[in-house]
Image (cartoon, rainbow, N blue to C red):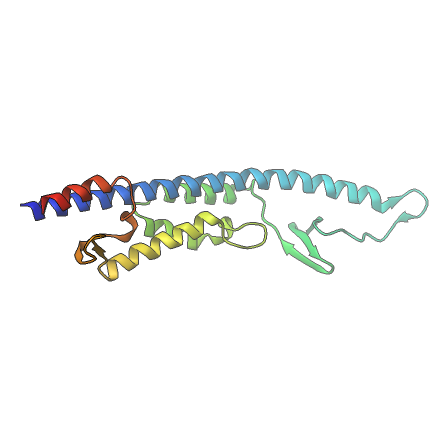
Length: 197
């Protein structure tokens, strides 16, 4: 009877921890999408202003049109598509965040994140859309790194049993995830289980 109770307590602790992790990552990923959307709108309006200024500079009253010599970050339109200068002689295509397709894709990603039932699904969504979860240098954001670590830890627990060792006797006791060993919420349950033995 005590063994069944112990297993039920451990399962409830594990489920509570998983729910907390899932909600945390959902909120963080949604915040990132919203921040990126706001930044893109600001960048586009600034880019249009810069483009207008560069066009104004190319026209000189004395000589007519001068050679452009666009600076890095300048946005140009060729054949209806926008490109940003990233280095001398190199241009990268940019996508408008205000287009219908971009807004729909962000909304779809947000909906998928909200409907995710576990951390593995969240990781799948992030890997499908890695470009939206990178900083300016092309590195993954810290939240995504945390999500990866959490997924790896859960895989490790599923693939091999983690055994909790008692502190006093240093003997193997029962299966228990390592992530909950130092958890303040789990301590009263562990003490209760130890006393029940």
